[in-house]
Length: 100
Image 1: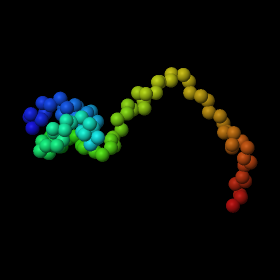
Image 2: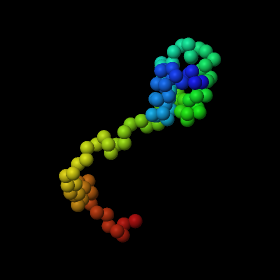
Image 3: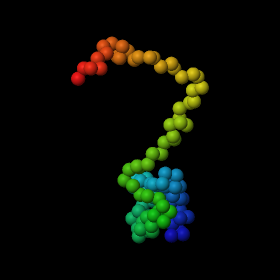
Image 4: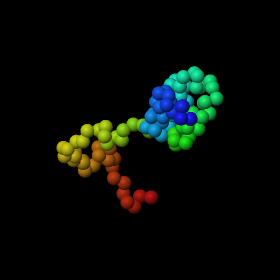
């Protein structure tokens, strides 16, 4: 497996897997050379990923986006004042409390 880990393609998949916690079969098929995909080394490759805690998935399932708090600029202005009654409630007549 040491020889396998020294391959740049395998290192790329490991880096991707460590960053996301998972790697897709599409990524593996796209990145790994055919000499690995079509050989007995593929079992060693999957074992290596498993030992590193990298999950192999059909499609990515984990959220890889930045938290929303880092994407939205902070607004330091005062919050908008709440209206006492929203327009819909102003238009609807009040129902008597003894109405059942």
